[in-house]
Image 1 (spheres, rainbow, N blue to C red):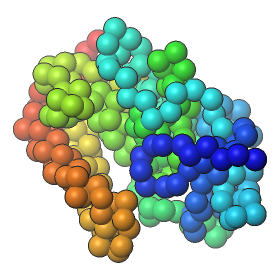
Image 2 (cartoon, helix red, strand yellow):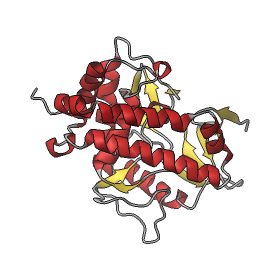
Image 3 (tube, one colour):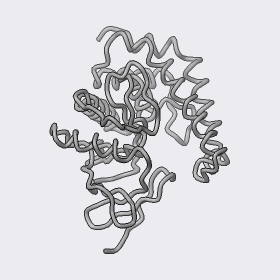
Image 4 (cartoon, rainbow, N blue to C red):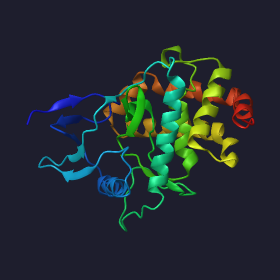
Amino acid sequence: MDEEILTGGGVNHVVRVGETVRRPTGAWTPTVHALLNHLAAVGFTGAPNAHGVDDQGREVLDFVSGQVDADPPFGDDGDARLHAAGRLLRAFHDATAGFRPPADATWYFPSRDPAEVICHGDVAPYNAVFRNGLPVALIDFDTAHPGPRIWDVAYAAYRFAPLTVAPEEGAVPVAEQARRLRLFAGAYELADKDRGALVDIAIVRLEHLIAHMKAQAAAGNEAFAGHLAAGHDLHYQADAEHLARHSEELIRTLKSPD
């Protein structure tokens, strides 16, 4: 069958074949497939089903219809998009709570304590499928790993709000970022004890991302080397510094009563 190249994050070569997607595998693929099989078994519909590997050694996943690699302007439906993203992430985490990894489980990233759920590891508009402007499914589970809920929530909020200083990424005044962050946390039903830590965790997530990009580039990964050459690390560092500067205002809004 004909193969259609699918564009996205620029790290993996991904193609569509009929109603399936074919992607490169890694040592973590069997564990990720066990996770996806669990999600299907418990009725979570916001992720593709896994179908093993093909004769070229690529993993085979369901093609999830919709708009992928979408980062639409916040616009009039921005609040609805944020709310849907928060609810989707909450549903995913809740569906993973009963997952028991294989005895020989291998993850792309190491487990983080407390391992409350299985984190997706890269929840963002470019790893979501949108229909009618709203995110309905998550894709690209390579970076999934056990960890605390807030580890995923902080990064997803950073990407979807977005909590950035870059105009081309949709930067808005801090007060509006704080409002959106609170909306996302509310949609997720983030516990009060985690709200005070959310901004600090977002900063740590960005520092983790920068370190990972540099390590991958140093190991010869051309995709990550290209990201560094394009200045992505500097962008994330600027956003981390922005969050640190405005941490008090963001947290104050997050913890304010409804």
